[in-house]
Length: 118
Image (cartoon, rainbow, N blue to C red; front, side, top):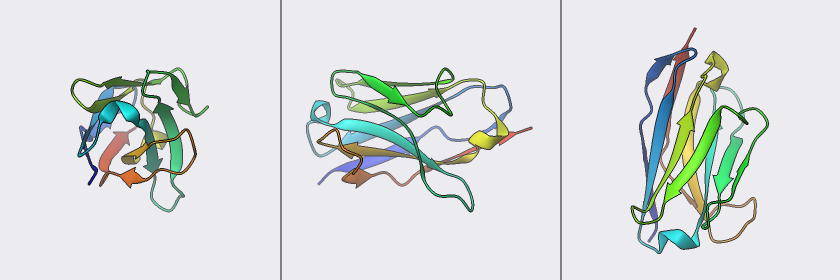
């Protein structure tokens, strides 16, 4: 059974940086497309970006140039480096895993809270 566990969320000031981590257990990590999503209070879940098993990345326009996704297949981990944070980045951030390059993700973490103060 696949399990995803996120960590690294915290309160940070606007303009600051934060790195989230997500580890996958239970399967061969390198097989999975890994993605980050976020959900702010009262809003729908929003795609942030994803990385393929080989390291190719794709980002939502709202975070392009500020956020970077990377992965370490040896550590079964994916990271979300967030720079130039804005109050509107405040959300619960989730990582997700899929075996295919689709918009449907099979496995989800429990989420980690990121709060950006102005």
